[in-house]
Length: 353
Image (cartoon, rainbow, N blue to C red):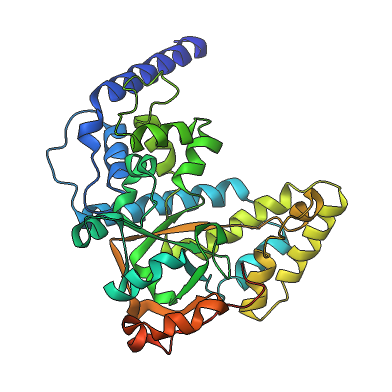
C-alpha cells in the first residue's frame, strides 16, 4: 500500500470516528456530575471508544483521570520545549520552592454570605442553602463545558488575584491545592479566544433559558470537540509551578525586538536570582497598570496564569487573610458573622485594586 493511500485511509478512518463520536455523545449523556471535570473525562472516554463502557465515572475514577491527563500534558510540554536553555532550566529550578499564590476574589456584597457559610461555595451548593438571590456569576457556558457549577475558583499565580472578579481579596493556604486542578484560562476565554465562538451570545442564550444548537456545524454549538480540546489543558496541583514555568518559557521565546520585549527579558532574568517569593511572583505577574498604554501592557505581560478549580466548597479554615477596601473595614468587623474571624480580616492596600 502506498503512503498516499495509507494516509487517505487514516484520514477517512479519523473522520468516521469523529463523526460517530459526535453522533453518539449527545448533551444529556454529559450532564455534569457533582464534581467539576466530569464532562471532560466522559468526553475523553468517548474519544478512545464510542461504545459504552458500562462503568460509573465516579469521583475516584475522575480524580485518577485528572492525574493521568495532567501527566500526559506535562510530558508533551517537556518534549516539545526541549532542549531547554540554561536560563530556562534555571527558572524551572528556582520556581520549585516558591509556591504560587492561590487567591479568590469576590465582590464585597457577597462577603457576608461567605462568612455566614464559613466557606466559599459552588453555585450548586449555594442553590441548596439559598434558593433566592444567588450571588454566583459562574457562566452556564462553562458548566456545559466542564461542570463549572460544581466548582469554586481561585487564581494561581497572581499575588493578589484577578481584580475583575471583585474587590475583596481572599488569600488561601498552599495546602488547598491538594483539592484542586487548573487550566491556563477560564472556560469563557477558551470558547471565544481559542475556539473563536461567540461565547457571550452563547451565555445570553443559556441565561434566557434557551438551549444551544445541537448541530456541531452551528457556530454556537458546544459539544464533543470543545470538551476534548479543553481537556488537554488540565493540570493537577502537583504540576502547577512547573506549568507556570513552561508558560513563562513560551512567553520568553516569543518576544520580539521591541523596547517592551527587552524589558520583559530583563524581568525574566530577574526571576532567576530573586529569592523572595513575594517579589518573585510580582515579577512573574506584575500588577496591571490602570489605563495603561499599549507599551505598558506589553512591558507587563504576565509570564503565566492558572485558574484553579476546587470541588463544591473551600472551608474558611483554608483562608490566611480576607482583605477588604479600607473604607469598609470597620463595617465588616462589626458584623456578627465576622467575629470569629477578626484575625483574618484586614484592610486592602491602597494600590491593590
